[in-house]
Structure formats: structure tokens, C-alpha cells
Amino acid sequence: MSNPMVEVHDVHKSYGGVEVLRGVNLAVERGEVTCLIGPSGSGKSTLLRCINHLEKHDAGELRVDGDLVGYEARGGKLYERNDKQICAERSRIGMVFQRFNLFQHLTVLDNITIGQVKVKGVELVDARARARELLARVGLDNKEKNYPSQLSGGQQQRVAIARALAMEPKLMLFDEPTSALDPELVGEVLDVMKDLALSGMTMIVVTHEMNFAREVANTLYFLDVGVIEESGHPREILSAPKSERLKSFLSKVL
Amino acid sequence: MTTNGDATVKVVPVRHVGQWIAAAIAAVLIAMLVHTLFSKLPTGQYACHLVNGVRKCHQITEWRFSWDIVGRYFFTSEILHGLLTTLELTVLSMLVGVILGVTIAVMRLSTNRLLSSTAWTYTWFFRGTPVLVQITVWYFISILYPVISFGIPFTNLTFFHFSTVSVFTPFIAGLVALGLNEAAYMSEIARAGLISVDEGQTEAASSIGMTRRQTLRFVVLPQAMRVIIPPTGNEVISMLKTTSLVSVIGVVELLGAATNIYANNYLIMPLLLVASLWYIVVTTVLSIGQYYLERRFAKGALRTPPPTPIQRLRRDVAGILSKVRTPRGVLGASR
Image 1 (cartoon, chains in turn orange, green):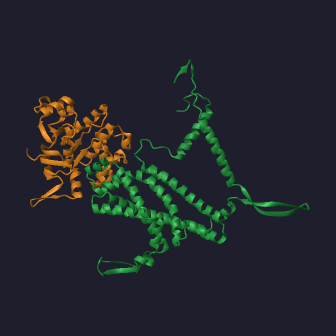
Image 2: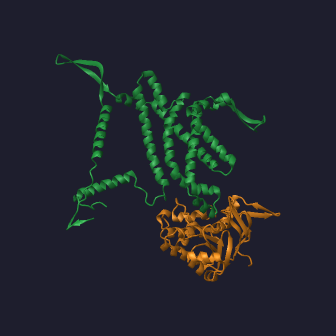
Image 3: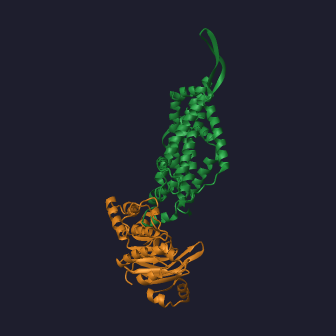
């Protein structure tokens, strides 16, 4: 465990008295794919959002690429970073949402261009060229002039992945990327994600797609009521679960 | 579709008898109204002249709605100056209202309690008092604050100052009153627009590293516009007519100009008609502008944007023409 991409140490998070994360520990090595599974309300999404600092965690340590997320350690104290610094940090962490969250008022091409231009300061021409490259990579090079509402769910999610990749992230977070899709559209998104995993991207995927987890993940974490109940190699965990909770969870989803 | 042998079975739509009767009544009432618009009234005076040595007399009549007088005053310089003042006041006070209103809406949604409660109080106060009172108060504001000075608060240090009366001319007082009052309403409209944008949009913007300011400017506001524009168009049209209130502090706008004229010649109805027609003309122009603005900001919200009225007209005409050319009244002629 030398210099992992993500280190989560004893992270706690509550929403109005309800403790959603109760001391989570995990580490994600560079270039690895980590899957988080668990019943709804187990804190998977919250953990993902804490890694991106979309939510502030209450206690514990959270590091991405060696840096504390959202804070700066100086003289034994943690100073919360300002909006600008947090945004700079975030721009290197891609996030893909369950409900795509494409910018509805922009065309597909503009969705992928806007971050590069406004956040990274890339020239528009270069940003467009890169956006077209990424669209080709997710198999949507003929859709650049469409608006998100004119695309299927699967296509929208692939655009969302391209939008995140345009920022040249060192880490990609996927929050149930296929849960809002019609069954026949799930495959196309998973294919893009597999392709991304093969290219060496570090990924954390919250998912209910056990086959994807089995095939692609290097490590699988099972979360339940705010703690990591079980972790390890996906094939081992899924075929021989040790804890009762995982056994009962798998019996419902498999 | 059922078929009976080779022939397609005709579908006979249900007849709405009640609708037809109501439409007939409406048509008669409309015809009566239009007739009165262009009818003439007797004046009680007679004009006589000799025709082939015989003296013939007939009663003089005039337009019920005095269209001749309306036409005579429609383009007089007094009316046109008034119209210009009305337009200036409308545009400028809406500008103040929109900019200040959006600012107040953003303040209202701030996590800072002082900012949000300041915004709330502003809206509460300006919506809570009649605009007519506000106009009058701003006109007489020099009674409360005779001097405006710039300096360090709560000390005697001032850099420069001027007398309030010199700044608050009737026009400025009216503009300030209308603008500040409008900001209160606009802030609620803008707030409704801002909260109508899905939270996921903000999250996605943050996730690609946009700051809060960038998120507001490039992601949230453009989408909020779709919700903000229709009621704002309403506000502009309403403002156009509310500006007539500033006549109480002596600003001669459109209605004020008309009033000034009829105060001298007692042609009350024709001059009110002149003013009203101008208001309707401007409202019509504004409505058309609003329609196209809405379309512009609806981009991406609808899969296929609805056709413009001109496109619809063209399509209808084409449809009728094609029906005329192929006069088969069979089903499925139009798609």
C-alpha cells in the first residue's frame, strides 16, 4: 500500500442526527477499479460524494492523491479550503451521476467543452477537438449537435462520462451509473466503463451490476449501515461471502 | 381502422350542438360591438343647403368613438413625447428591477442569514406599500434626507455632497420608485426560476470544478431564464402602464400628455383612446418580443420546439392547399 490514489480513514458523516457513515476505511490503488456495493441507505453514495467534497465529512481523514480533500493541514490544524481551491481539486476528480445531470440548455458538444474552457482555460478550438475525440471514444460522434433531451438514457450517460473525462481526471467516481437506465441500455454504458478501466483509469464505482463488479473490479467493498462489512477480491467475495449480511444481500440481488 | 370490404369506413365526428349555439351567440355579440365601434351618432345639429332651389336639411352625425379626432391627435408631438417618456421609464425601471431583483434573489438563497433576511425584508417592505405612496415619498425624499454625502459612516468626514432636491427630479424620483418596487417583485420571480433548476445541475457543475459564481452564470441562470421570462414579460407589460402613476409627481408621460390635452379641450374620450391605443401597440410589440425570447431560452428543454406562428400559418396553408388539390374526403389524407 504505497501511495494509493484514495485513502479513506475512519470517516464519519451524519445528516441531522442520523449517522450515515460510521467509520469507513478504504484504500484505492492507482489504476485500480474499486466497486462499492450494498443495500440502499448503506452510505455508498455519501462516501463517494465525500471523496469529491460534494458533502463535507464530519470526522476522519480523506486523501486523494496524497492531499486532504477540502482541507489543508497547517500547524496541527485543518483549515477548510476556499471555494476556488476546492473547485481546482474537484476538477481533477471526475464524477458520473445516476441521473446523468447533463446541462440541459447546452448541446452535447458544449456540455463537454464548457468545463475545459471555463475551468481549465483551454482554447475553444482545442476544447472542441478534444470533445469530438471523446465523443468518438464513447461512440457518439454523430450526436454533437443534439441536446441531452434528444438522447436516450444510455447515450446521455456516455456523454456524461465524456464530460468528466474532458477534465483529464486522475480519478473517476461513478454513482450508480446504470441504475436509471432501461435494461437494454445498461450494456453500452458498462462497455464504455470497461474500456476506461482497461486504459488504466482509477475508478470507484457504486453499482448494483454484480457481473460488472465481478469482471472489472480489482477490489470490492460491501457497505452496510455506514461501515465496510466485507472487502476483498470480487470473485472471492461474491462466490464465498463470509458475513451474514452480505449473504442475505447477495441472495436478493443475484 | 375497420374496413368494410374494399371501402374505408368513414368516421363521423360527434356534433357539438351546444358549442355551435354558443359560437353563434358570441358571433352576434362581436358583430354588435364592432358595429358600435364604427357607427355614428346624431349631434342634434342640422345642416341645410339648397338643391335645385329647394332647401334641404339633414342632421349632422359624427363617429361614436370620434375616430377623426383620435387620428388627429395620434401623432402630435405632445403625445409622442409622452410615449417616449413612458418607454424610457419602462425600460430603465425594468433594468433596475431585473438587476437588483436577481441580486436580491441570490441573496435570499444565500446561506448567510444576514444576507437572506435582508433580502426577505426588502421584498416584504416594497411589496407591502402601495407604489403610488413610494413614488410620492421618493419625490419628497429631500424632506427626510436633505443632503446626500459620501464619506466615512458615523463620522463627520465627507468627501463630497450634494443636495437631494437637485438629484431627485420628478423623472429620477419616478424611476427610482418604480425600479426599487419592481426589484421586489422581480426577486421573487428570479428566485422561483433559480430554485426550479434541478440540484443535479449544480452538482454536475461543481464536479467539473466550476466555482459557485461560474455555476450560477453558465449553468443555473441560463436554465432559470426559461421560468423567469414569461412572468418577466408580464412585469414589463404591467410596468408600461404603471408608469402612468408618475404623472402624480408631474412627469408628463403618455397618459399625462393625453390628460394635459383634454384638460384644455375637454375631448376626454378621444384622448383616452389615443393613449390606450398606444399602450396596446407597445404591448403587442412587447408580446411578440417575449415570444421569441422564450423560444430562445427553451433550447434543450423540449425535444422538438413548437413551430413559430408564421411556421404554423405556412403549414396550415400548405395543408389546406393539398386538401384542395386532392379532394378525396377519405381518412388518412392528412397525417
